[in-house]
Picture 1 (cartoon, rainbow, N blue to C red):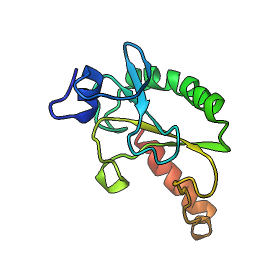
Picture 2 (cartoon, rainbow, N blue to C red):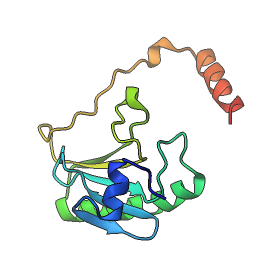
Picture 3 (cartoon, rainbow, N blue to C red):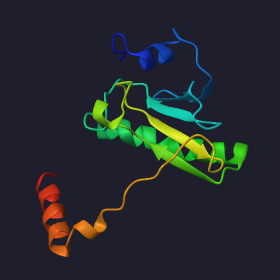
Length: 141
């Protein structure tokens, strides 16, 4: 199930060492070497799937079944002020390893190394715009 030259597949296979947090038949969680914030953990499926667009429903179900459990372990360990769950898809959105993964980033304070601010653009869209946009998305489901 591994993908050639994938660093996460190499970690799962034990070819590259990692600080393992959790493992079962389908999911592997380990500390991100960057430790953007203390306790920064990656949760990945063992099956190589590139991003959210290729993630199979059964893979997602297996992965997300364990995310609250791992998040709660981080919460018990660090008592953070909050926790961000981040997933980047495709290079333009900041994905640098093309094996689906979630970042669990405990938030320890304003100077903890992570900023999650974005611009509010709600005033640019009318109720009609939102109805049209939602309808366009729904048509593609």
